[in-house]
Image 1 (cartoon, rainbow, N blue to C red):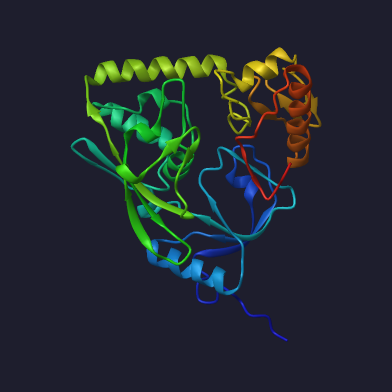
Image 2: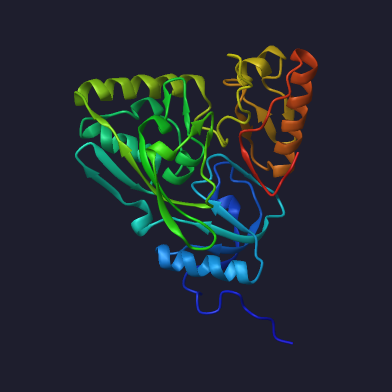
Length: 300
């Protein structure tokens, strides 16, 4: 009996068995059964409807900066909102409309150059605009939620809506977005002297360049800070774990909350290192660290 192709007629935007290692900062991960690149909202809506009709699990991929994909890959449809209109950036006065697929690091440089302040303190944070908003990316110099005016989203039923600032709730690495797809966001920035903004941007960037292993394969901070003013990196360092290695995965000797993937590293290596660090920190400080890195479809 001939099997039904769930994406028949959508071949122009659906590939099969695409290696996700090509799309993550770790350069780790097996194949996605379906890899979907919709050209716009209508194509996205149709592909989502097909997934629902055929009970295909759905995942949304940004730039893979905070993601660990299992070695066996993902048995589902991975949606990648990239290229074309998904990367559009429109600057109108103090408001900046940004597509979900826009490169956030490049966006910061773009607005700094035109004298708009508000996100220069987020220099060095990689990712797509959609992922940046969903996780309320930030650090010691602020969070993106502080400048979000509205977010455009789509749910699994294909309904598109705009969520205004008054309805948004941003927390530590979180936002109250129940919808699966972030389509874009509008930021409200402020005018300032371009040279002063650029100076602040460079200071943050240089600080991160000297304190983080930016020239290695990593996924940013592996663990969330546990609260109470405590730093996950400091707890890992205090437990003497810098340089701890399992397989080809290693705790960075520059920043203990970054795990480096050396040649030949597998998702299994990283998972075992995560578990090992959790246990050692628990034994040393009585704190169970919670992963910040997203895992597909891995579970601890």
